[in-house]
Amino acid sequence: MKFLRKLLLPFSLIYLIITAVRNFLYNIGFFKSFVYSQPVIAIGNLSTGGTGKTPQTEYLIRLLSDKYRVATLSRGYKRKSKGYVLGSTSSSAAMLGDEPFQFYKKFPNIRVAVDADRKNGIDQLLLLSPKPQVILLDDAYQHRSVKAGFYILLTSYGDIYPDDFLLPAGNLRESRSGATRAKIIIVTKCPIALSKKQQQDIIKKIKPLPYQKIFFTSIEYDDEVYSEIGRRNVNDVKYMNKALVAGIAKPEPFFNYLHQPEDEVLAYPDHHDFTESELVYLEELSRKKIIITTEKDYMRLRGKLPKDKLFYLPIKSRFLSDSDDFDKTILEYVGKSTGNS
Image: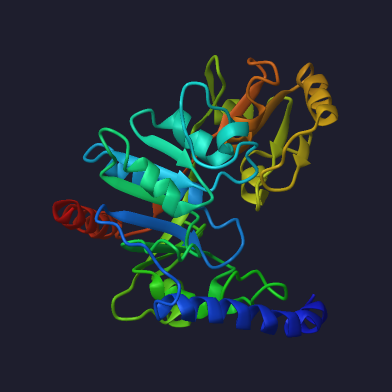
């Protein structure tokens, strides 16, 4: 692997030049970045996939939606629709993408939209009546045509961006200097027992700037799995005859949480669009086993498999410490920006 990375380093240098020139042109104003009076929070990463953007976005929705009119705006990766689409009762995972559709089904008190053109998406959201007071940009860290008022950068424990390389030798979408846009950096997917010393070692690697705060979170799994017709305790289903299905970037923690030796384990690529033959196989499997999948995959599988056999396991982002400080920082930004707008 190290040898292959060395071979790809010249291509990473080309990628570095292209992304650096692009960022420089935005920084000097040659390319226009649009700024909005409404508070806009961008949640994203420097690397490709698997850093836990969805549970962190959901954390922000829970924090803000009781106090403000919240909207989320995503690209809608792998959706079959085009342009701007606002979530409605006729929406599906195919129309919105699996993650936005998850937000729509889970949080009926917010507006959920998708648009690859983030500026157009925000402009359309602000035409709604009443218009949203806070807009959460999901996976928009590199979308420089919109300048968010607040950037949250996610980086995975065990794969933090200071240890990574630019594409294609590594997984970084832009150079590590892109981290300077963030006001908060969250190290996600940490072990719950991560010590203060280990946290300090990571902070030393990241080298935050004076205006940046660093937080550590872990993934917290629900005590129950859910279907369209009910729920079951995780401790009960762990020992049932089951199949585990995941089409996410890094499914190992999900599998490890539920896996027993006799389980059938099926791993697919991230945002996998299940084929007819795969659905037929899963339907046949469901006659003998229950099927447990991730919440994101459930959005694509619901309605295609028997309701009493298909379950999903929700996850949440859990701060190891200082969650009050995180909440206060976000609420202060939103409160001040909402007042200004």
